[in-house]
Image 1: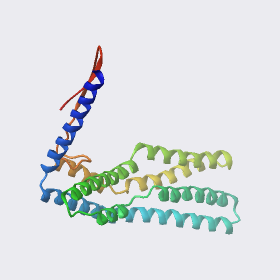
Image 2 (image 1 turned 180 degrees about the vertical axis):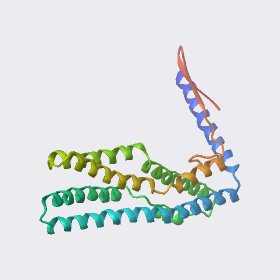
Image 3 (image 1 turned 90 degrees about the vertical axis):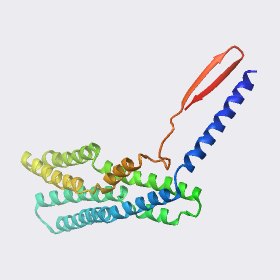
Length: 239
């Protein structure tokens, strides 16, 4: 008897979910689905130039600084200069490497959306869901680039560089402070020049459509209740 009640409950749950899903999807006009997809693609395209300029610009600057400081290291005969150039090349190399492993770009996202079919309503709903996920991913990438963790990571590296100058190279404490300040100015400039357009556009989009990662305008939040009694278990869902 208990197994029968549980089976009936599960069947009813699946039936209710399917009905709610169908009704919710059909509640969105085709024109609005298409409008939201186009809007997301336009916003991502709008963010593309700023993202690429910032990412390639800093990657190029760090790479050039690494090569330049490395060259000075090999041609200089001054001990302090060689130390500064070796340490500087090491820190700028880390900066370039971090740019490479944390790319800020929507180029591939736009290609994905362009290749997705949208001939039927189900295709369009699926494309909208993917578009919103990619839109949020771009927003989160910009948000992460301005996070306290990035500030803390850069501060740690810069502090280490300053301590190496002072303690390992046995230079004055002011040389170490100067190294720390210079590197901090560069890394903070990198952080605060990072674009945030996708992050702002995503917030505006969510407010406009009352949406967050779902092609459905209104989310249904079900509540689950499990009860046990002699001879069986019942699962009840309330919307």
